[in-house]
Length: 423
Image (cartoon, rainbow, N blue to C red; front, side, top):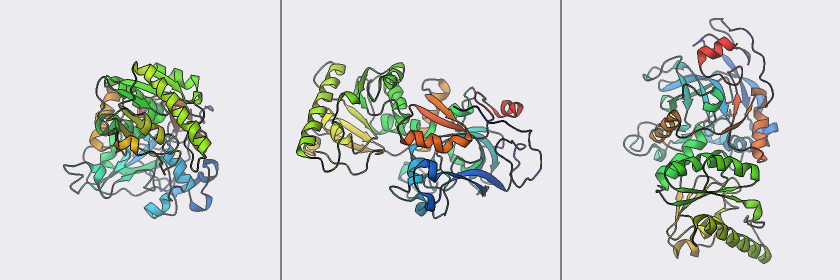
């Protein structure tokens, strides 16, 4: 990481037009404008091109909303998708001509809407990224993820966390772990809460089961590995290097498999007969490696999927009889091709999963507070380096979780009082 940027003195003007990145206003003072990293249609492309700094109006706060000054923001792949304008343009989804990405943040409550009663100015929080209407049957007695108005904040909404301020629904706020730094607290929400719903609720992993985790050293995988171990199951972790293998070993992996030992494993559209044979040979070889970890000739009971097109055929083939394949995304492609006979003849189940509801996020966050699950923050970037962080993620040059400093002046600070003193 580059050294943190210098800070100026505490800003004390009652109602400033704006304050520069590197300046902290008095608690609760809302400026008219803010600095933000903005995506627009005319510059869709890779992160270095799509993310540009602009001065934007600070968003208005509705009755059920909260304005948060962002201390640090987490980096996720949905920022890359937003900048590419693929598979859909998120600007067409939320009907704005701009997009501020970022679905993870730690920060300080700066202003509360008239209907918000559980939070006050000055509260130190982390954010979960599920938004819903709060009024339908799914939101009241059901699962808010079934709400017809459900959205992922910072992706399907215009004001995400890569700005000095963000606006969120009051129900999105969670207590920040007091001893955790701003950068650590910003790094875990989206990936951890997604993995929690997948492992705990959707796949309902049981003690003694075997779980195959693709991309185990990435943002989703590091939490899946910890959750699987916490639930008394065995984690079989697929990584792409010895270094990444060491990381998941420290998290308790029972078996570590380097996918580079299986050339030809990835499915590619329009494969030739020769490529198909090479892929199936590599898949069977991987299956034998899994048998060695399990200790008998059987596949994993659960496959943790998020890679998509390249790995999904292998996931279907490798899962044990009555196995469950739980999937939350598809970073290598959304059109999935597989031999369905392996699904019905061995009675396997494909389970879709999408982020988590507020109650699941709260349950998961309690585990962070207790130290039972830990963020795996491997790199922190400055505010100026936000496009670079996304570029490195797009190029698969990162592991664990990653965050960027926004309002905090340097690494290692844990609360507002300490942060002001450091300015």
